[in-house]
Length: 99
Image 1 (cartoon, rainbow, N blue to C red):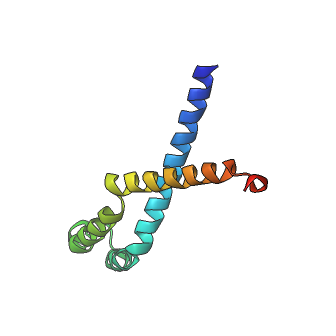
Image 2: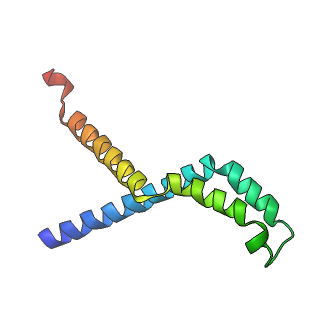
C-alpha cells in the first residue's frame, strides 16, 4: 500500500507544480503585457523579417518574462503553497468545541 500512496502523492505534487507553473506564466504575461504588445505590434504584417526587425522588442519581452518565470520564482511559489497547506491542516486540527 505504501508504494501506491506515494505514487498518488507524487502525482498530486506534479499536478500542483503544473498549476503553479501555469499561474506563474499567467502572472508573467500580465506583468509584461506592454512588452508583449510592442512585440506584437512590431511583428504585425511581417513573416521572416520579424526575426531581425523585432529583435529588440523580442529581447525586452524575454527579459521581462524571465524576471517572472525562473526557478527561484517557482520555488518561492512552492514554498508559499506549502505554507498555505500547512496552515490549512493546522486549522483543521483545531476543534472549536475544545477552545
